[in-house]
Amino acid sequence: MDKYMKRAIELAIKGKGFTSPNPLVGAVIVKEDRIIGEGYHEYYGGPHAEVNAITNACEEVTGSTMYVTLEPCSHFGKTPPCAQLIIDKKIRKVIIGMKDPNPIVAGNGIKLLRDHGIEVIVGVLEEEIKKMNEIFIKYISTKLPFCILKTAMTLDGKIATSIGDSKWITNEKSREYVHEIRHQVSGIMVGIGTVLQDDPSLTTRLKDKESVDPVRIIVDTKCRIPLDSKVLNLNSNSRTIIVTTEKADRNKLELIKEKKAEIIITPLKNDQVDLEYLIQKLGEMEIDSILIEGGSTLNYSILKVGCVDKVISFIAPKIIGGENSKTPVGGAGIAYIKDSIELERIEVKMIEQDIMIEGYLGKE
Ligand code: AOF
Ligand code: ZN
Image (cartoon, rainbow, N blue to C red):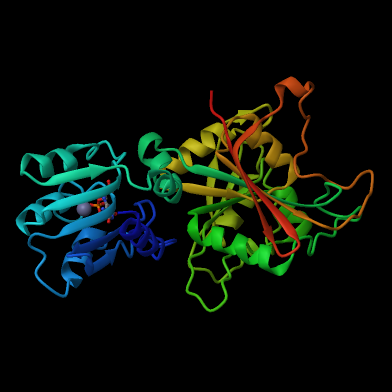
């Protein structure tokens, strides 16, 4: 059973970066222990994985077993319900990775199949599939974006040297991995300090592969962004949003609009952009996921308001010292260890000589 579900996961992953805010889904049709059809959800709004697997089948699917990573849908959305198609095609058995957390499906697809006498098994390689769709699961159930905080530091815990140089702390492979993440998320967020210091372009650059740029989100309370910064002058397949407050100069906002960037004005919270308000607003704009790439002030603020779901931290085996060199998380900091922000479900990987640690924020 696992063998075919593994294949369905492999297929689902091919859609990475193209299906947002919809899930990654793969399907395999099996007859007499042979795969007779395969499909996956290739792009947002396109046919669902089940439909593609049925269309691609090289023989009659009647009496076959379908392995699908997500519960077949039961609703008329952009496409007709897959559960009904499975019934019409007389597929005999359906093995499902996980139940669909989408409230308009949520078990209805499983029920429809069972009501028509189809044997259904739910929960095969479920943990792996949940991880693959962690963005979809959070967004469909809360309408808030899944937020990933990414940091990169030296062995002695610095994100730049004493004069602010940071190119490059991590190795090329680690940086390529970050571009893979940029390709998968809808938005990328940095604070104005990072724009002033590094002038990043915040685009996705993948070797030999088509990619999508995330929406660039710059948190800039007083609208200090230079008009010649790269993010305001890019040739990109995505947009730039400047997030500011009433502290911004009106004329500057007009000049930014002329640069085709969008502006979000949030209420002031502790004299700064209200990050909670912003995250909710971005969710309403169908941004299902955000990669937060610093700097240390924004990292602290966003952690503090509890908007981070996952942390990906790179540690490079380099030592640079410097009492005033920045660390990944700045701000006022937390006074007592007992109050520290703790991660769970930790995974550690080596990327050549760099160490990558991933973990999730436990939510009370
Ligand atoms: C997908 N691809 O392969 C499957 C999905 O917007 P629609 O009409 O395409 O429907 C999206 C919902 O359909 C999605 O939220 C999920 O609940 C269900 N299944 N969606 O995009 C697929 N199987
Ligand atoms: Zn469907």
